[in-house]
Amino acid sequence: MTQITQFSSLAIDANNPERLGAFWAAMLGGTISLDGDGDARVTAPTGPRLDFLLVPEPKTVKGRLHLDVWAADVEAATLSAIELGATRADDVYDGGRWQVLRDPEGNEFCILPPEYA
Image (cartoon, rainbow, N blue to C red; front, top):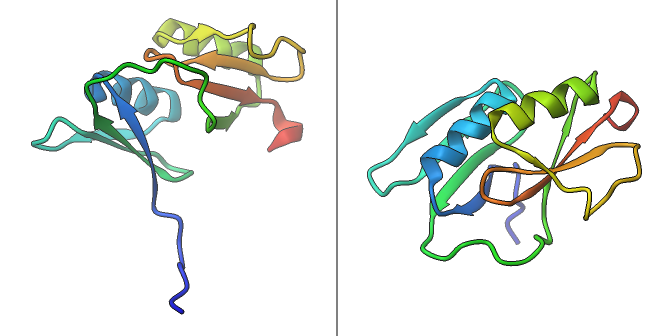
């Protein structure tokens, strides 16, 4: 049996891959590239590559998979994310240990403090 040797990327469905890719590139300090099919790829200094794939249907329910990102200052990172187009997701979690947000297409993600890094 052949072993998988490396995690390659996380593929995320998107109605507007370019917009969503630009959001995540700004969030992670990465770069975005677009292909001829309308898909976007984000490569950041750390973490896996993110591939945003064009799909016609919108997100309709809470995702079973989400991104966790680390920040030395959760409050400042939350404000930056909101300025880029994220929204708070206090209906998912409002416990105060980390912040749950939604990206511009409604995908949940968490900003974690240093003790969760």
